[in-house]
Image (cartoon, rainbow, N blue to C red; front, top):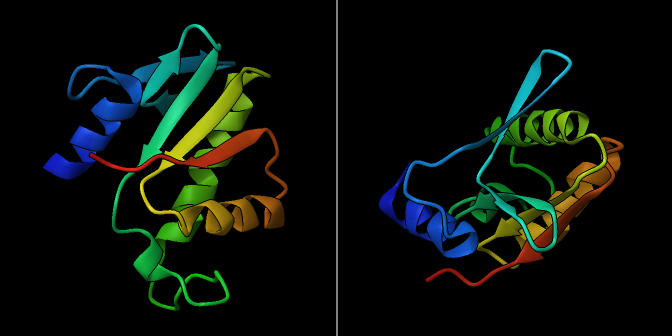
Length: 119
């Protein structure tokens, strides 16, 4: 993880560097970047550098295989969370509609995507 991604993760979660909030359910695990105790929300952060891999129609560019990884991560997190709210914080405003579209197209519900300005 880059130093700027680590700084963004810390800004959002307030967790120490390298911290992982691991959740297990039915033998499957998912890692989250943090847990907001007051709101009971599992947190995931996506720092700078993602939006350049998507075109004007919010579609992944042909070379970019990371979109499928994002979908798999979201699906796994959703299954393991078992109804606990999930919020993905993104450092780039355009990633909100990109992820919402990816999630919608892959029938992923229950994950809120919000823009959080990076430090």
